[in-house]
Image (tube, rainbow, N blue to C red; front, side, top):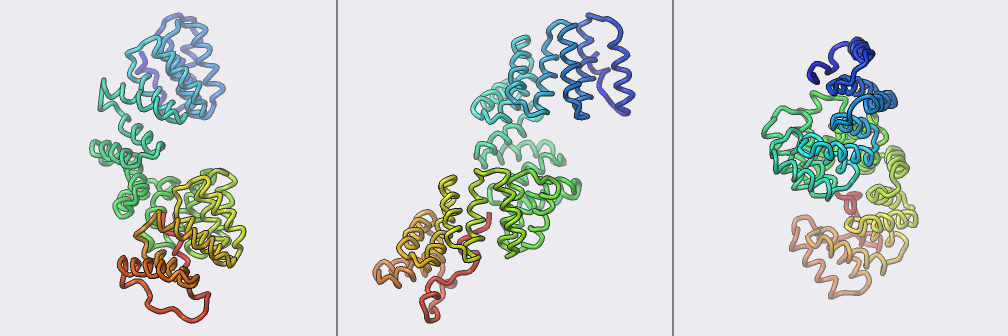
Amino acid sequence: MGARWKPAGNRAAAETVYRSVLKAPSTDPQTVDVYIALALLQSQQGRNDEAQKTLADARAKLPDVPAIHKALGEVALSQGRYPQATAEFRQALALDGEDLGAHFRLGVALRRDAKFEEAGKTFDEVAAVDKDYPGLALERGLLFEASGRTEEALKEYEGALAKAPKDPDLMLRVGCGKVSAGRAKQAEELLRKVLSERPNSAEANHCLGRALLLEGTRLAEALRLLERAVELDANRPEYQLYAGWAANDAGNVPKAEHALAEALRLDQGLADAYWQRGVLRQRQGAARDAIADLTRALELRPSRYEAHASLADAYYDLGKEPQALREWLLAIQAQPDNATWRFRYGKLLAANHQTEASREQLNKALELAPAKIPRRVGPGKRTICSRTPSDSNPKP
């Protein structure tokens, strides 16, 4: 009976049919399919309160069956009430422990609620029964991505895409995954295909913009795409962050300031937004404000070692060379193969009469990038730490 009650075509007409069926008194368990079809139709239209009432009526009039709890779980998921969705899917499984669909949706609810370990175990249990369960690879990829396991996420996405090579959702996930893994060129081809089909996809615009920002050769296009993502979805802090990042790289101060302020308004724990604002403030000559932002960025994300290089610049601007030397050392310890940083650290060591340490750093800089390190600097102390805007602001 369930297959007969899927809303299609004219939604208003479908709703009329469902309501006419439900007017007739019935205790037939299969009538639950009609209630569920009506509730899902209401939920798709954003009428979540009505959907919940429809399902509550079903629970009051019909036997307690897994399908009702699954439908309640779906409505809760659509509203972002993840603990309630989890409880409903668990109740469905208590009534039918072999319902693989309920098991899978439980994993989805747990993932969205950031219960990553439980979600992973649940997806493993689904895979043990059916490793090719529809949507499983995509959900596991999302789980790995959310928990910072980028390479594992990408492997899941690519596996899913191999089975459905024209699926735009999977192309988007693989493309965004490749951006996160630093594979911009590979990501660009996929993301352009997605964007041609979905020009109003905020995520497609965002991920392609990030890929181009990572490549570093088409900054104007990257900024346009990242700004378009913000236009389409202004409530995503990471979208605001990257729009600000690109504007920062482009030297567009008003755009960078606005986007980074929005990113921090939406998420005050966004470490990279503090870092980028610190970079911006340091370039504007507001060294003390820059130090406050950069210090906060490192408190929130100690692995953002580029902030140490930015801090070195800010302390140098204040004439606090011992602190600048300390920050350069921390930056180089985190990225020992950065020739430019070693060169600038070595020159500042020389200016502070630390000759042996300076010689060691300069020699290492020349060894790492002999063609890129200048052999001479102009007169005057300020040229000792002369820098380009991108020195302490690498690509994402």
